[in-house]
Length: 406
DNA sequence: TCTATTGCTGTCTTAAGCCG
DNA sequence: CGGCTTAAGACAGCAATAGA
Image (tube, rainbow, N blue to C red; front, side):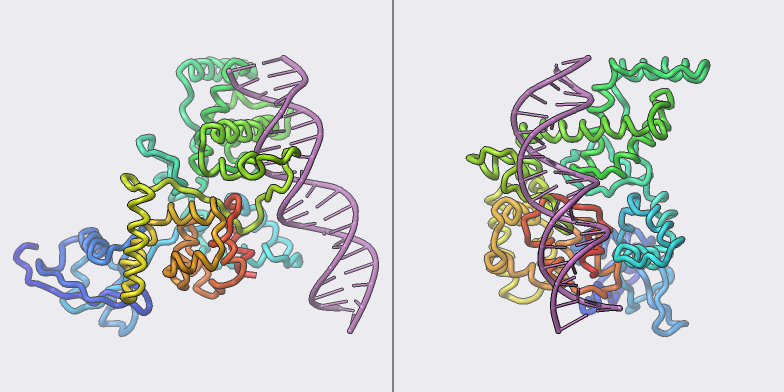
């Protein structure tokens, strides 16, 4: 690659954002090299692949599998990869709605559009699961991972695993159910921890996923008395998540603290008086600040962002700064319930179709424009309420999208 | 200590009633 | 008939606490 001559490429970043890329060392030998150059040069965030315009087919684009397909002054296109929305909750609904198409309620239309867009959604999900299992080295306060198709049952404490191993033997040999009283706290705690990596407020369907995975890995935990052998565990987990949230709330977890009744109405006597409950399409995702950043440094970043917006539209720069300041913006909006007018004044860059979509993606990890081929109104009240309001939790992705589309 | 329960309340869904 | 409003019931979350 060192002896190749300098090259230039035309790079389509977005529909109306087309750039020139100088490659003084020529076109790199591998696609991944080129991808990282593109990523660095334009400050791209998230996963993407490259397409190239093939001269033989006029305006048609093809996946770039080898850099030998492109030459100097060719056009390449950045295609952002959107992971399919989590459908764990709704696969059965999809099936049933296909079976009974007469029931044309809103969710049905949402599901069918999802399956239209992701016809191979189940296979791509199962393909993703390997890479989505969280690595233990990462700090996991940030919800960057969507709910897995197969819940990874964590490794329990050593003594718990010993009891389980013995229980498994006995179960295999004589079909004896394990008395798990002594190891129950450890099991619930570890499961709760793992669940919390993904969601703070798991739905019943998600809890069922967890239990199914647990029972599959440790059949001796199955309870023949309850439905599927799962119901009891699901209830336990539900209680546990409640208790676990209470524990974290007490320790000052911001995402949960914002929902605490005391914080909202310290002087009210009735426990749940005047408390806003979770509503569809509302979130209070409160990610921690990026490593090494403080409120002051991020405020500085916000001021630079204001300048940048005044100067002109450097979309990539703005996008980068908007991404960087996401945590502090959420803090403002969720914790202080900042009026929209104030948000407009402090974060003018947010009031742009592309940024609304970006912000939505940051909150939910779903790219609406890609998912629905930009057919939806990003300025709909529902979208606005999602991005700007003080809400409580991310309800399941599909429902959010559903309410936005309608 | 930790799981499970209860009381209180907000939100959502559904069905009934009303009206043009 | 279709759109809108209203009421009832289901459900969910927090806090306090009963129970093992």
